[in-house]
Image (cartoon, rainbow over all chains, first blue to last red; front, side, top):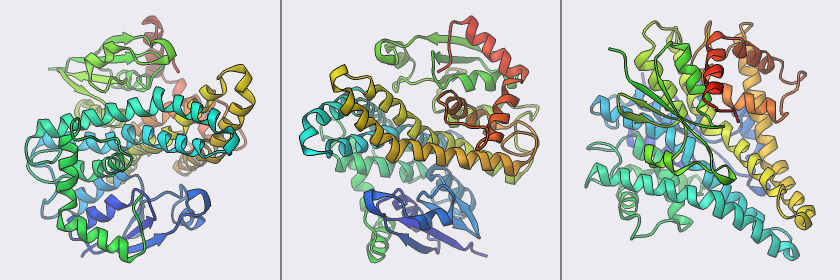
Length: 228
Length: 228
């Protein structure tokens, strides 16, 4: 029997790679959507879904899964019956497992700090010269060097894996699913350049051309959801 | 044949739970230590170990593993021959897997932001009234509520698991290993209270009383390493 899947999707959140994952595997799912409150805060309705109140939450036969890396791993382990995304060998499996930890465990933190410094810069007008100095110091000492370090590493991973434009092995895997979110953000925030990140830019094009990715985008749009 | 293990340990870093993990499993390992530079920055020597230049890095037969959640998972999958830390059943295995993603994927970010706001407060003396306002806003709108949310969730997990003071099942698991770091930090930064977090405080006592934990502390001390 196919599982009953509900994706709890908060507008402008990391849920966009989970809807894409479900489309890649051709799974049926219900989409429940949530809008952010003032100051971009997650609404109280999401706390009633799961006490941490974050997005995505993936409900599978009533069991509520959280954490993007865990969700991607869980879904592929349990529902990738045709081995569409599964690793072809043990070495690839280890690379994918590392990617699932790495994307959320290390890459996202400097991006969130960069988001916070953007907010700091938007403070009271008269204080802005000083606020810009404070934000600039946090960016130059922590956020920007760490984002660049992570992007250089991902560029190298893609280069090492060869010409198919994907992160691990011969076909799409969970590594591609999980790295999409920070790399899309990196592009939108102008952290990518064609000189330094040709492989990352090619990867983004490769992904965005996929049918399943486009289907996910259509469904997001029809549900009134937008990407961060 | 036993694996050749080298733990690359940066002073005041997340490596302290990996040395504890190795002690719990009774594995032989070499300890290579690194001191932080000015402004607490990771030294260039660590970049020669791994391009991301972070700690911990665990070298296993020459293969370099990064990401705490992945390292804990890898070591238990490959070297827990006597099933000391391994899950007793499928349900526990899922809980442990989630914990390994959750600890680094969600809990650490607000702690790192709180560390950054502490740095912001230490800016030039004359600017401190405004710096305190900026830091206070980031703390009250993001860092503190998110830290409290995570701690309440972990308190509930421990309560739900019953009286043994551990996170999953009947014995110590990777979940206990991975949650130790943020919970120790939470105690040191005074985020814990006996009224709100009795189970977390009991867990910290339970862990710190373990022989393997004490052996790890002795070895850290003898190598001149200190905990963050």
